[in-house]
Amino acid sequence: MNTFIPKHTDTYNCLEDVLECLATSYQREHMLMFADAWDFSYYSGDKTAKIGNRVEAGEYNAWRNLELNHGIKSKYHFTSDMDKQYTILKSSLQKDSPVVLWLDGYYVPWTNVYQKLHLKHFIIAMEQEDENKISVIDPYWNQKINIFRKELFYLSKVRCITSYCVEEPVIVPEVLVGKAVKKLIRKEHHAFNCMRDFAKEITDSLDFSRELENFEMLIYNCPLFMQLAEVFFRRKNYAKLLHYLAVTYHKPFMEDWAGEMKLIGEKWEITREILVSIAKGELNREAVPEFVTGVLQLADREEELAISMNRKLN
Image 1 (cartoon, rainbow, N blue to C red):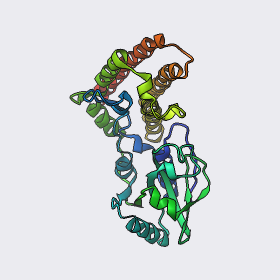
Image 2 (cartoon, rainbow, N blue to C red):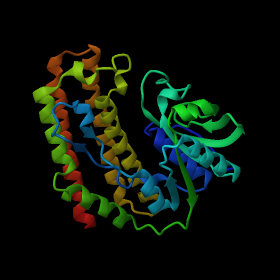
Image 3 (cartoon, one colour):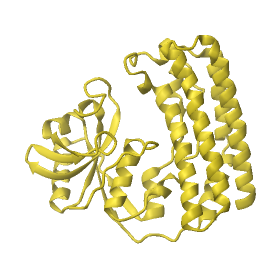
Image 4 (tube, rainbow, N blue to C red):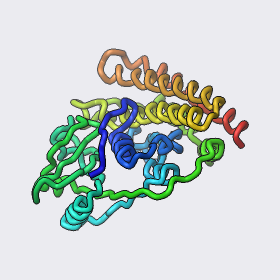
């Protein structure tokens, strides 16, 4: 069986922890899975939906970038037939090949959402103890071997993801970053204007009771706060990517970008906490304009950085 070193990195979500763990087991790097992590999406169309369900940190295709930049290929098994999923799991584990399980955290006993909230989660199956028990590791929650029962495998509607290694590609940092930055600023409705539109809707129609509905006991898990957390985590992780490229490929000019991106991530975190504090009753509603101003300032700051990077790389 592969050697796993499960750990939780404070800026990583459950998927990113799993991918780092998987890459380490293959003795590969993982940092370039964040190649497209710098983004922001906001959908203004359906005003009947919560704002939190219409704002996203953007699609960054971590699995795809892990393959393109580190040579770790994956295959999603999408069948809804749970007997087939369990057969895929058993077959892979018999070949000494780990399996990532994409499942509903509502059925994962050691998480804080167990039997409380339905949220997607990722863990790694290592081996089968017997017909009804699977040994898994969960880098995000407890970094230890847990027993996951077959019953919960079925209830959580697991989708198995298998993986294997191919030859690692040659990386040209200027091309990798330049391509991502060009895409970021040339989209028809780019990230920075999405931020500005998001700020406007917060000003016009934020309804805390609606955003927190069904999440009153776990407010950090409401879509709005979860998505804003992804925004600042992505920026902190993109800063780490830029630092990684600067050091690994001897590109010192990328260190300045890494430093600025890290500060931007920290500012996003501080800005989000304004809304969280209002939701908790620690600040009153009059603090909302402070949040909006912060988002608008960040939109300008990020756009300026992107334009500067694009000018040098493209």
